[in-house]
Length: 138
Image 1 (cartoon, helix red, strand yellow):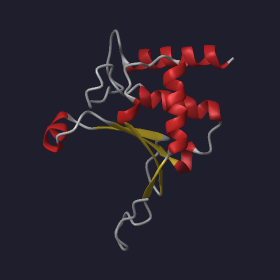
Image 2 (cartoon, helix red, strand yellow):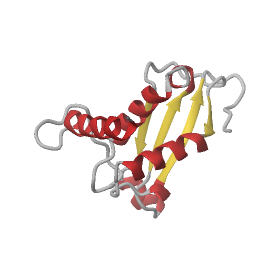
Image 3 (cartoon, helix red, strand yellow):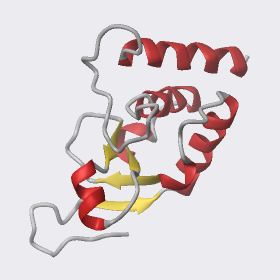
Image 4 (tube, helix red, strand yellow):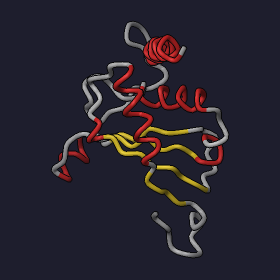
């Protein structure tokens, strides 16, 4: 767990690795055949103390950082405990599918924004994933 310096405005904010979320996402990836996602380059954290109104966030590692650090593309999926943990398992899976939808098929480190239009749009990709998920859930 990472704690910030006492007295910092972020001192009540912390992250913990979330192996339970990793297991769920890897299961979703396998069940929905999301072969473009590289499980070994996905990292999962649960945060506490965030003022964000989101249930979860996806963080990418942009090309400039990859180049500077000499590393490959990677993504972090952060679930915000105060909101995410209160959801039913089905709703949590939908949130995780939403976050997965931010990862482009080329797994470049970039993020797919909500505003993308046309074929392969964020909304279209998410709807397809959720439909496939519910087919396999029943």
